[in-house]
Image 1 (tube, helix red, strand yellow):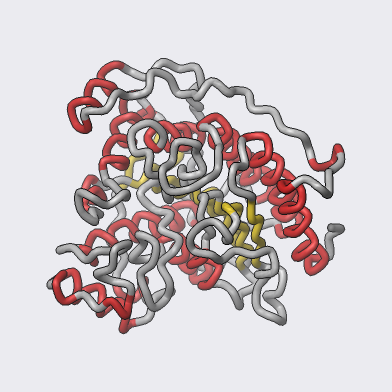
Image 2 (spheres, helix red, strand yellow):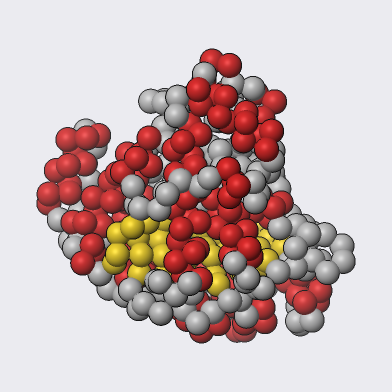
Length: 391
């Protein structure tokens, strides 16, 4: 197995563009790629462009009629069929939509193949993590569900246990739905409570289909306003114990940056430093329980200058084995490019000034009257007994 990481990148992924007024601004991808390069991380990863996902690959998750609808909308955006979630406010149709969506999916599938085959120990596709797309429809800025496709490809290649950990502020509903009946896939999602945020799913009681898959879906629904200490407490109270029990052959993680306190579309209050701490934790879990096999994806994130490029550059650096120190000064050349492209002032350092982030371990005790602890208790009580674990 190669000890090097792969960074999946094709400049054409920046064509995933819903228009100038849409929050999913592809500049976040371009700026992340430039910041990765500004820190010299290209020397520590193999930069690879995978081919677009073909129709047979897309059909591992998506219905044929939906793929046909995406192709039709891609060729003629004005004729997009809203019955498939296309041509809506969230998912406007645009020319070339199928091609660029398949390209992003192909990068995640390629990452999964490289890790499974031992061509790379870790692989990162920060353009991916489009976790809301359903088998038969677009949803939440997501056309094809690259995360689900990567997992489905791992299963096709012979994997018997794949764990998926999603720390985007929104519930990873599309991935949960894709593997609802499949006990080979453990899906864990930490997200803002469905009472206050799209897609209004991800309740603790959603635990997988009855039968062998029951207990294979895990949902930690966090109260709005949760900050660093609560977010990390919840992650460590649920995720490591489940991963240790499941012992996946590959760990797939989704690192939406929209948990950040500056994100305009959600209501958590997490810092860049806490996001980095969870990235480190996922890396360590992969090494402890999955022989280091780690596929890391991007996701949401709509503070496209201040947050997303820094968060995902940390992710790439951690995967590359050359973590960027939180106190590191951001190269001036990148900051100048940010201003030239966006007319916004770029951050000066790779931290929000909260490193190291402190939190209280679950084992130290909990408060049943605390809203954060109530969320953790609900998740543990719903799933842990189903897996033979103490809640």
